Length: 389
Image (cartoon, rainbow, N blue to C red; front, side, top):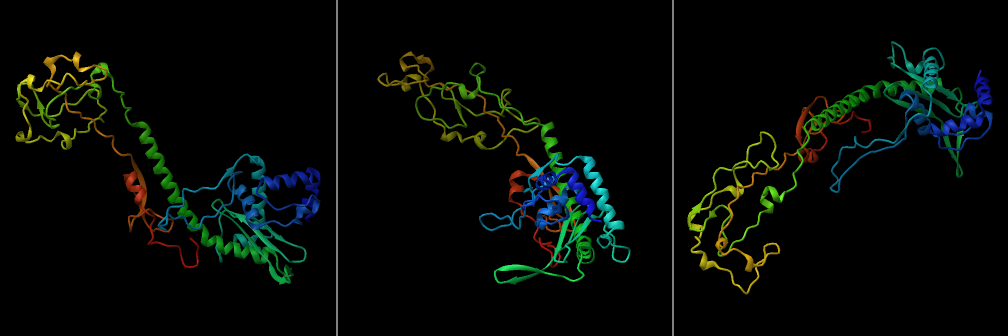
């Protein structure tokens, strides 16, 4: 019955078959002979799993990768969900994927892989597809299969060490359909619900992230206006003062009368956010009048003519004496720092930490980016005993 595979390989060319095997993830050397179509060349289970996953992902090939833990310099566990494998597209035609998917469905429903799908007594793996494999001398037994959520490959062998070589002993009566398919079934019955739960958390987090991006795009941060000297921006105003330094909270005049700043008036040129109130603390705090020295007659504070006082490139000799000792009163700046960007985080309903796939309940909270960076993944809920994280 397996001669059909050899006939197809002969018609399309065995080199073409090998080329597609490499493009789909096989990394071991494949012999350019027709029996390779029957599995005569050795392959790695992880490579075969990568190749079969293309049928589950509608033609997208994900490069295998493994992350057991991501930690910082202090050995604190970090979220590893943002690390994604590389992927390739447009390797197989959609009609090719559809035909093979139908063929692999027939294997588990009516062929040698029915034990992989299961029945009413053992439980049915919904959406199961797969292929059994057995070498002629029963040294290897395989089942490679997938569902829309997960691709799994089971390989079985009896390995013995003979000197420095590994020898695969014959397993009498062992086949992929009888030994590997039940293992695949039992594993998938336990793994698929966990994968469903993990996918729902990831999809929820992706949805929240997409909504946050959409909100930020609809409400972009205002662009900062460059200072314009002609408009009289505070940064470009020239101030010339002599005598004792004045506190920033008091605005002296030439007659020695102290003027306290009034309620801040919004600067029309300032970069302020809509509806944000002006700050009421900091440099706008009024200083005690006793600490403000008065300025006497302008003649008492004339600059030394031997010292060049530069305001830009203007020497002191060209300064109008009537302006000496006078400080130009400017309106206090009302520039408000833009608010910190907020992000939405999915957290565990019990601990309030970032939810992991094993949390029983979770909810969405909105926090600042700085707060989100300090959060860590929930450590209360862990995978069931015997299951790797």
